Length: 268
Image 1 (cartoon, rainbow, N blue to C red):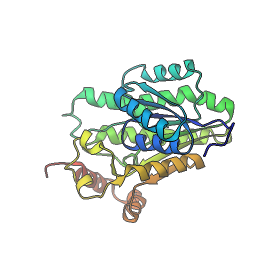
Image 2: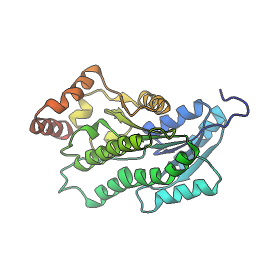
Image 3: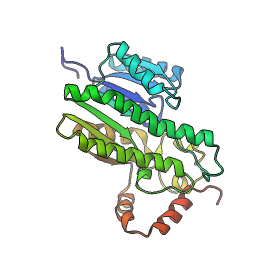
Image 4: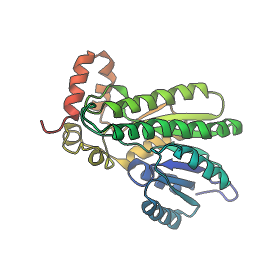
């Protein structure tokens, strides 16, 4: 319950129309926060705005933008600024993957992936961070993946983009230590978000042999970790998977590469 007269924290959530982003938006609204929701689908955003304002009150602003397009991050920042809004939490969730051998995949798809997963996330962070630092407060949550912890044959670009997100987030967290601003990386395992369908991975062993976690639980872990200023949050993983990740640096790289390829490959 929001205290009377107390500013409602404003969270900007990208990729808010589905999956983890949708659940993060719902969770923030349920905690008494206002929102700026960014995604490509204006209709889905409008529907979510109606749901959250009707259920929780507060203010929800929607911005239909394709963040994979050049200049989109600055457009979002300028729209927020021109509306007189002050963002307290920046949640960079938007991203997508795609399966297949790199040399066979359409370059346009992988280029858009790099623009969204890396350039949009980095651009939004660069644009909002100076204001956070000036105020001496602010939270950044960058949604990465356990894919960031290893190379990913058959999803080479996706895994590489998530490695960037985790590395970038951790470096910023140290740079900002003592400023009142924190940066948290959320590293989910396989999660039931629609990602597998969009990335053409529904029949891949990583989704058929491993039980996918629920998006709501992953979002809750990330949100709580962000509020606590944690560096990394592993979410949606069984104890066995956590142990495997802990042992990963000790395994021969060639063996890891073959294992990851088998998990990503369909039709075998």
